[in-house]
Image (cartoon, rainbow, N blue to C red; front, side):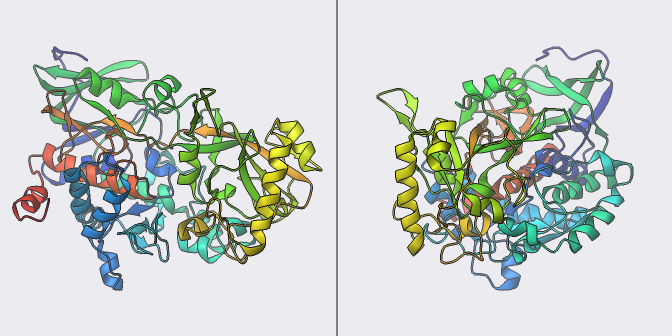
Length: 566
């Protein structure tokens, strides 16, 4: 942190946004529209951030698409759902602040940047129907296909995702039988969209915001790494950045907005702050905790809620743009029929078709040995699974690469090759196969969550889309690795209702805002729900941009004054 402003500034804007995902771009766009100039600093050579790596889902209870279709939902029901699952880690005012502003921010960006959204039909909340306040459909939205050629010279500077089929909508995927049946998809629409570079999912959502910034002539500075905040007294007034080894001082007349996602590409931060040992990561190399370092030096509070833990694997030969291994999430594959996940004792420990169950199970510690009970772990599959279902980019019928997993003619041999306890594995598989006959899992309720059946199951497999016996050799085992949350973390900077970073005196730091994954998740606590992260980013960008431009939202104070808030 620099406490004395330089005598000369290299660039200047009213609002300086660090990070080019939906939250950073949204803040720049909103500030511009409310009378303030803005610019964006992006560390990597492409814009779009982690938003562009995602499935692009945006989760907003009480949105206007639900109302148009007559779906019974409301902001209040969304608050109830979140509160019931937050485990006490949320703050009531923050839950309501997000809930009441998300529909407003959505409509704002639809009107101002031409954002076009589609309601994802029949996609339930994670915990539907077991948790009060959940819904069977309506809250999950996605971007309509975006014509990337309209980005001009920024078309190929705007990120696409190596993780999702970004030329297909959710309806395209689900109507073709979901991820389980991708080998039988009708790829006509995908081919047509790819030929025209029409982007769906996260790449499409990010592209709308990039276009919104370009239409306003907001400068987007890539390959520009924000290094330090510049302060004048107790106020943030600018940023020291580096562009291709050249030092730049960027003046911020009204505020700096930090929206740089998480810290997961710095393993020491994952261990010390995220309490996760040596996780692999699916995101780009630039996600290294800039918000913690910069805002922390300015006196901002770092806070934590339960982390988002994941499991992943690496298919040999797949790399990210930096030449590092491309790690894929195991979520869509470990809940398929004819597969299960076991620990080193050969025992199941969770509902494989509901990733929240698996990932919470990973945290269990054996107090007698001071070791994690369920890690390391493996996904075990049989010949039926490999003939019918993909595993990442390894298509059905393809040989399992030796660098990816182990292949054996018998379960006993599989156990020997992996180090899994053979007796435990045989007992587990025998018990599980018995459950498959009735399609019911009394141990972990596999297949009972409608969301898991859609996202990690085969709708054509009866009677349970997530359950099928493991009884035909050869058999396969893939070691799964702890994976950080794809830019989502439990740790971040504490902020107020306007996204101003809060100091240790519980007062906002003048001129400093944090948005999206840079902000601690006190608005949902221990809950994670697909689409909630993108919704937070869009909403935070709107709130921070308005306040920095001197036009703060008054919706939360009005809700408090009306008695609509307890």
